[in-house]
Image 1: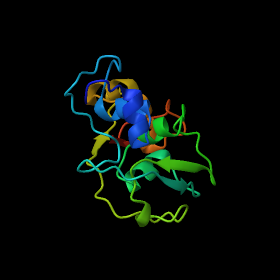
Image 2 (image 1 turned 45 degrees about the vertical axis):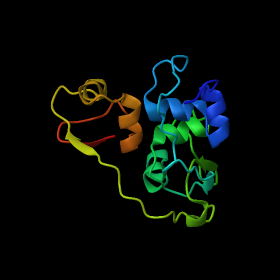
Image 3 (image 1 turned 120 degrees about the vertical axis):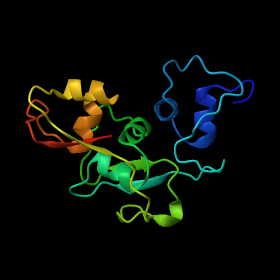
Image 4 (image 1 turned 45 degrees about the horizontal axis):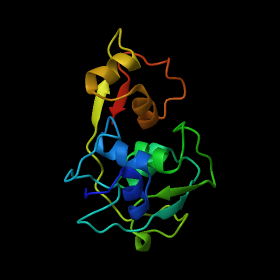
Length: 166
């Protein structure tokens, strides 16, 4: 960060949103950033920020599965695309994939450049567990677990069930 910078200007410069930068960096208060602070810009690598790619949602896609394909998180995709509910995508919808290499994916082709899968943990539900208690124990949110596992009814988890912990 340089003198005079704020998250809005940085987001404009790199073609992303304030929300995406806040989520990517775990910023609690966007008003408290300082000169010299290093920020990770979603989709950037070695200081070069490729432009966004447009992805057309295909049947069976979830925000989580799309994010994994493009090496990002569902939270960043939700923020960049202004989605308040990560389950609210539909077939044919155009999503902005920030920082994806435009040469690696024809819009809507569903064949982005291969990326290594992010590390993830599998948790086996125990008697008495709730999504809230699992999320608190693993330092995540219930929404993240719901999205990662495409849970249709978050009230119905059961002992022995395997959950992806994002």
